[in-house]
Length: 395
Ligand SMILES: Cc1cc2nc3c(=O)[nH]c(=O)nc-3n(C[C@H](O)[C@H](O)[C@H](O)COP(=O)(O)OP(=O)(O)OC[C@H]3O[C@@H](n4cnc5c(N)ncnc54)[C@H](O)[C@@H]3O)c2cc1C
Image (tube, rainbow, N blue to C red; front, side):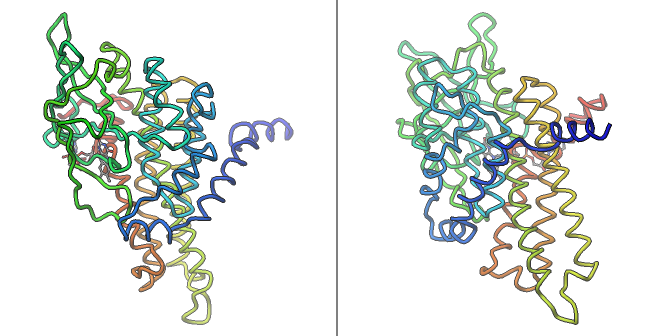
């Protein structure tokens, strides 16, 4: 009986040796760079290219992509390990959510052979980067209101529209733009994804000043009559909606990994500090007013991580529907846990929590990203209310 139980625990709740080895290797890379490097780059307006390239060389960036296109042949679980561990080491690279997770998954599943061969090896080794643009100024959370439209021309496509809050266009070669095209039969507009080179005439972008300390910035995007070749359309015109859904689960799993990583980093710093800092007779960590909130943060991060791993497991097994619910719940839980962990960590350090030397205050805004993007917590609550609980829709 006890033997059976331990076998079950080993297979269901312990990571394999390979996954643990990946975790250790990524963590070692992240710690060689660390939060000081990450913040110094952000504050001096430089990019974190050397870390991205090194992660690519080590095979971490494309760990989820197919082996035949230079990837590691593993899944979103492994990619979430990469982002979580880099974040826990102080280097939360937001573009890992975008290039390998969203764009890589969509192109691997729906791209033409030529698109796969063109993009995936470069995503894997870090030599090509792609941003992802769905959010529009007047559509916000309501993607049914997207107004970016691609119209057919004799040579390909003309794309017009506006996007906002698009991450990481600097340093990207192209942007995967979610637009709409006219259905030849019904005349109705339906989703379609286009790979738009950042130097295409008519494609312009302007940085949005954000209060997030990161080298990966957000941009407004203007697409004015951007002429694209026929093969800029990802996959074919009939699979746009499926493509979009294929990108959403890895996006949410990775948004959870981003949040869990930041939360872990902040919590570890706070715990180290609370063990040492003594202002009365005992270290401050002995006071339950300090210890209990930190223990609570640990529990919440651990729970969020468990749900993230469940979502990744389901997605990698091909259960898109099951993964959808779990990925939404994981993103919600991780966003909340991360924001609370960073807030509590800042508080634990007293005045030092607000200094540049300790770097924790710089994570306050980054830790809130998980509550808003890629989908806000209210929209996840709407999803769970309607799909999981079958409650009526209010909007
Ligand atoms: C740092 C950062 C990076 C980002 N990167 C990208 C990117 O790379 N690519 C990209 O396409 N987008 C990106 N985004 C955009 C992000 O996905 C959006 O900000 C998000 O989807 C919310 O849209 P919105 O900002 O327009 O908010 P709105 O839709 O205007 O919502 C505002 C508030 O109203 C609430 N709300 C809206 N509708 C409802 C409802 N029906 N019920 C209850 N509450 C509701 C929301 O929850 C939110 O709190 C990024 C955003 C940030 C902050």
